[in-house]
Length: 292
Image (cartoon, rainbow, N blue to C red; front, side, top):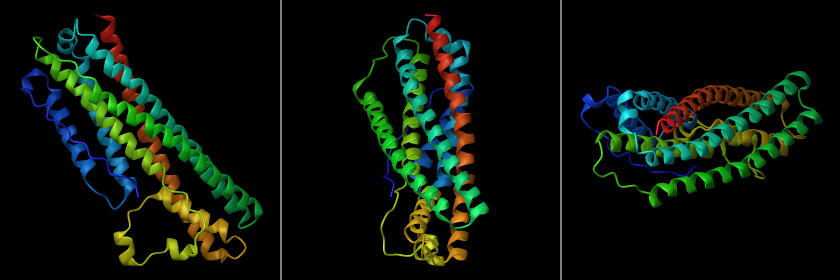
């Protein structure tokens, strides 16, 4: 079960006349706060919702950072821009790593789908299942490292604080927005990586059908995570390879592979869009530094 992370977005409400993007930023932050606190029957849908909200927030913040008023207000306050700029390097690296892991996972899934269509149940399919399980275990190790790096970044907010005294009130508002978007991005990537890190199950006495096919009541209570579901299906398939009821079990595995492939494609598209938004914000911040 993924850990719960509680994050409270502070209000950045200021007179809306400062910049037209402020109401939109406030709205997106509140929406992401609600998203973080909510529980969803489908983890996949929750991640996609958070991804869309975060991308929208970056677009709003880009309007604020790129406006002449902001650029003028931040003149001679480069130290307040350097921190979110430094933070963006780690966040972009995490986003790139998540995209790469999803891409590799999709390759394994497509190979398995192709093998099952062409060969049905034979030793080559079982070997590919072993390769997929090994990949997932390696991915978990990489994800664990990424989660530790995100924790370190999160701790930086607690240890670093720069007083904003006797300066244009527009400056603390912009700096606070940049801090908030970094915090919520860290939170999102924590949830995404934990979602991708669904446990790879091994030995168990329960059958494939007993673990995968639930009653209607069970389905209503179960939190759906396609990443975890395909791990369960393939581990059980591998364990009972010589005993399986090929017709029923293969159909279950095929269905799970199709579900996880669709989820991966949607997440890849969303992360590509988010990555571009993060790059654009970094470019805007770098442009600000060149004016100091």
